[in-house]
Length: 301
Image 1 (cartoon, rainbow, N blue to C red):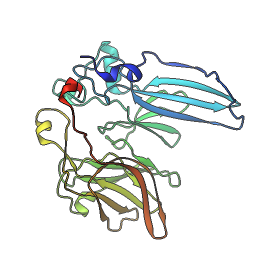
Image 2: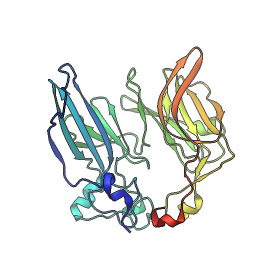
Image 3: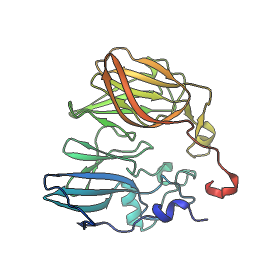
Image 4: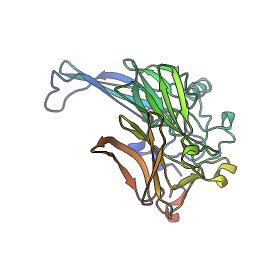
């Protein structure tokens, strides 16, 4: 059965390209200058086994505005795994639905396909499974290599535009379970937030937020599945009775605090700020991480 994530609007494109965009109507304001960049999965070679929506090499798409015109560009992120498959001219990795034991180094493919953010004068392409942060030239979209520190970085790290700091969260299956990382001018600091707030089990967060004074980490009622890990596969277990916990971490090093919310999952944050003594966070509340599947829909139900 062909994966539904390789067909229709999900079908990958097979080439890189660059060129002007034609306007169907209206005009581009002459004082509009800047670039919009996004990334997403776009497999160059077929994934071995079943193909998941999140599988596929990272590809950047950019629209550049200036002087009343718009130009489009797309280019693959040349991670180590992408270069490896390019040399072999075939796919070498199994995806998220399969065991990683037959993959090179027995690991998930690091694709940089999940998030793109501006850090200093460059872009950083990040992967939801915690791969390297891949440095990209903002003008040419050329991959410049991995960021030296840290050696692994979760997707949805944040850059403080006022301080230039890169803030990120690090979650793991062993204590302290959750850490806050800050990268500033080549200097990396890590804070064991899980130990500080007595986090008792592994959690599976996806995003974070920050304000001028706080970093906001998340401890959702979801943990990595030991059964799936033993089989070499990715998997998460939800606890429908446990609360969702926000961890408010002062950036000045003072004690962190935990706030409980009703049971849910939260994939993505829209914004956060401080207002009249309160911290306000806007995000996408998902009642369940995984909706019930329908066996009649087959292998991809």
